[in-house]
Amino acid sequence: MKFIFISIVCLLLSACVTSQPDPNVFDTAVEAINTAESVGGDEFAPVEMRFAREKLASGRLAMEKQKYSVVVYLVEEAEINAELAIEKSRTAKSRRQVNELRKSNEELEASLRETFGDEFE
Image (tube, rainbow, N blue to C red):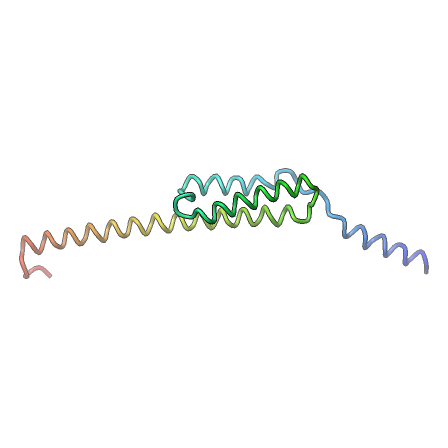
């Protein structure tokens, strides 16, 4: 009975030990941040970019302090924030294009009304 109890305690303790994450765990977050920068994340989603960089830096610090259970969580948050910055940037660029096209259409319509008068519908 004592042996079984000791075995169970050892098993539970070994389950609580976290192993060191793969050093490449940061690669996807870094890549996402770089992509976000290239699509204008700093201009269109500065808050998300700051959060992504902060989470990545916190993840690296946690790795140095051997707090492995937190590292993956922080890196995933950094990646998610970078992906949000990417999508917000793409949305803002699309919105800008739509507004430019709308303005162009309004100018064209005004020009046609000027040329053809009120008959233009």
